[in-house]
Image (tube, rainbow, N blue to C red; front, side, top):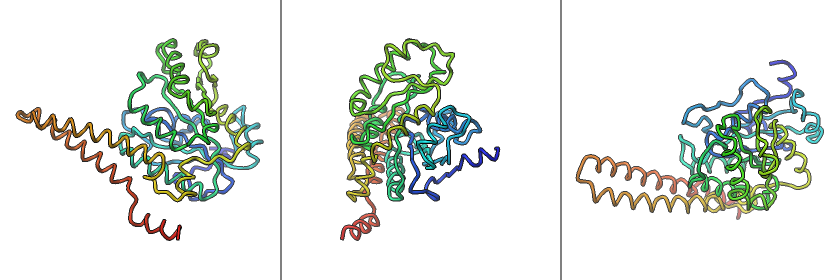
Length: 330
């Protein structure tokens, strides 16, 4: 690493130990393997910093943050962004997905919520939020719907104008026509309501040789070849408003517990629905528990029920949390 690179980049695994009130944070959210760590590495310009997964097991098990003193000069957007930041650091925040393979959704929400709460208490500004989606993924299923719903409850309607949806992994697309149709469906059907509230849509195609002509005339959103172009679009508008995410307002200003927040209530509702279905399947397995295969199925269903109940219990505030809120309100 050159002296200039050391000047431009400061890595903070905790992300908050050396936080500054002038810091501008950009959380990256989305499903596991959507490309969050890879995008941060691309923003850093080589010299891989964040662990990138090439297996089915998640790499980002906690919140990781990188603070840049300035955008590296090798990027064409550097001068414009650095001028807008006026000496403020930009902090890229890598978060685990709600479908993480190593921790339950309740643990993911708690970690994200507490990080955002702590950063807000330290005076750090949310410059914008990126929600990444792997364009190679097929049908929009229940997990994707739950993830998006939780994301919307974390951000809130008032902050949607500083949200950017980003489709990734266009270099891995087998059929461009199918991918552009999928991008059209995402932009209009699944993200449409949030876009009406001001959220932006970008298609990150880092290889300019990829032939994606349909992206321009037929698919909403903008094609960008540099991830810094996405950050630039956020930084250009962040000075027009003080962005605070809904969950930050709920936890700090309204002094609510995570379970009482919009995201906490949404996750609890989702978990209760999953618990109801798991109990139904367990009852079916019990009625058929006359052979070895049915017994194995019953054990699996029982474990699923226990795990969901543990997630619901994890969302409840601890005695320490209740005591702290009592004295904060009193």
